[in-house]
Length: 464
Ligand code: HEC
Ligand SMILES: [Cu+2]
Image (tube, rainbow, N blue to C red; front, side, top):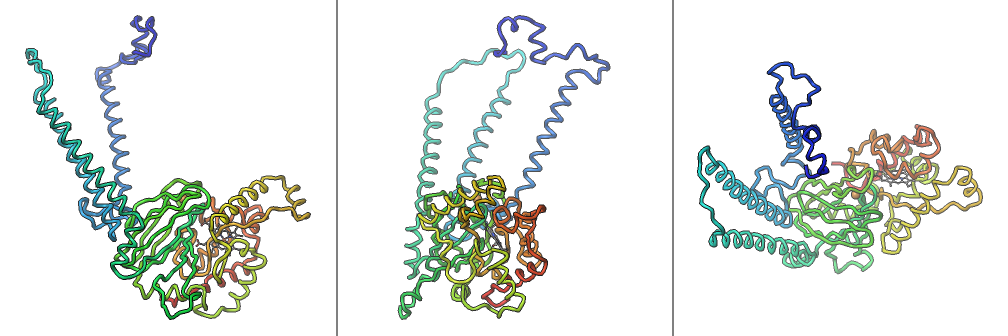
């Protein structure tokens, strides 16, 4: 009513129609069963039903046993967490949650009790009028203060525990080194770089053999029981790194290197996910963490980039030629030797971002101009970040954890990555997808088969 100009406020007809609180006189009120009160009652029933429906649907989406949930199946326990970091975070969450539930129930309960028990009944006289109640007021000032201070201070301590120093101290207790892994977020996949993939050196080995450099994508391997320190970088926009069962979210910000750590106690596979909206395929930016006994992890490190588990078939060898030639895959992807192409030093990262911007701007030029640029050798360089494929066949998925890796999905991916992952940068930028109207790869079926064989041969671990 406050919104109405005073002249309209004073006019009974206007205010009635404007507020809609009275039945519209133009609609005949035919039968008593359709009276205005009944109708509005029915309307609120429908609203209630719709709200309840939405709630039920939302609740169906919750699955405390889900791979991507940090919650436990029994609400107040810690069985949804693996390792000291996740447990600490889940404990804090549980205590916060149940404290808030208790406060809510107490306060709302007291409110409802007072409203119902002491509600005004017909004929009641005016109740005694009071002002203030010192003990009560002191109580409801002190109790929340203690609660908030306590929970706040504890939260800050949990934050401190996420600092890599804790991981180094923990590793020292075990008389060894933590594992350092760098995760680089790209639209829309994860790069994992191991500067020193096996931190406990053998002092008898020459120095250059002690340093391992491994670059892989979307599937991270870690040994169990060893603290893992993550350095988080981004190649483009802000992402967020999250392995629900192992560690909470941490933002991945361009030009910064955020750090956090975790430790997996049980071997197995843990799901991860980008948790910050980062563009078209954000929801498809998943990853996996394979935690395994130290010996198995070491075998992967030792095998990485070395001899293939099985020699290449003639088809695979032909596929390699497509990879290096007609397919132009090598302009973006690395297979084999230690990877210098995808190095993300500060300068390289900046240069790559500039390259990417220049190239995408160039793609917007009219086709004739682009053709002219190509003829005169003026097209901008194309050096894009792409998953390192050295250990592709040792992985279990493609498309950033999107589909299982097998010959069929790989073929589908190569024919047109958009069929599997709409918005991906490979079909947007790779030359072979730009020449056909249907946006498919400009490669023959045979070339595709050979490529699949070549990629499926990139395996260093024996098949289990
Ligand atoms: C313009 C750069 C570029 C070119 C050229 C290119 N790719 Fe890719 N490729 C990418 C990017 C970027 C991704 C990651 C896409 C995603 O998951 O969003 C990718 C993903 C892949 C993957 C899935 C990897 C994984 O772990 O999910 C395979 C396999 C692959 N490419 C093979 C090839 C082959 C074979 C060729 C040549 C026919 C090729 N690519 C050409 C950029 C490129
Ligand atoms: Cu992301």
